[in-house]
Image (cartoon, rainbow, N blue to C red; front, side, top):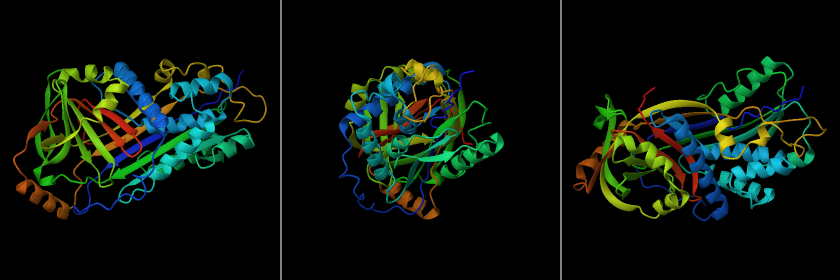
Length: 404
């Protein structure tokens, strides 16, 4: 029986958004604005992010909440690509839109982006890669992934192995994701895992006292009351015949949450699946500052995906059946990817202290008459973007807000 390599790629993408502390002038970013990620790497990540998200929308439909970390998935697949050879590496890099780049350059840029994100003055971002293996790793592979991830010996006892991996993920995601491996099977020789944790405060927190129950209209027209946050402030704003969009900045300069609200609830799927990479890039140049009266639902939810089929549709086919991982392991045993699992958590709320709420109230009361009103009372999608690098860290859609 041929041995299988079960790679639990992109084990955890975790996002926690919280407004805390009094509103104050942000400190200048420490070196982030000066760091320029190569355009080809950033563009490749954007193309992969949009392609995967659009595939998920087509598969899952717009009636379900979706949340992905394209950045996290990319990081795990890059770890995998370092151990692949021949057509398997070509297939992985092609799926990631990095066919024209060499592995050493990709690794260097990836490390640079990680270092930049992990030095946020106010928020917290960590991306941790690991490989858990029963086989001996090649020294060249270990050298290649230095600074990208850590290698661990996979315990022979399946219960101990399962416990160790889940404990690692739980620690890296600050207890938000406590189980990713149900049980290590006998033919599993390695897991490649990426865990992402991101916590950040709004630059302009919402006042919890302004939050009130309001109807949220699903794509089928049904309505259900849900806590709706409200504030009026100057935000980057964008509008065309298809949607309204607003960008909510975090305390750390260059990081923001962009909300895209279709002008009709039923148009979410059409809006998402029709978005090209060129259109996405054009949108980033179209923001103008406006006084916006914004109503945004408070929401939190978890997702758990097996990404085998979506990744196959994007071009990763042979690595699931006849892969070549000769750059990873010593010896000549057969290996293939068995599973690609992506588990995420997101929470978006006011989460401000009483002091910050008071500051926010003062801003709202002294604000000029809003130029535009944007009420996210029907399905919308959102993106967390690092504008310093252009990387799409998270992509999601809200079909029905949940407040778990």
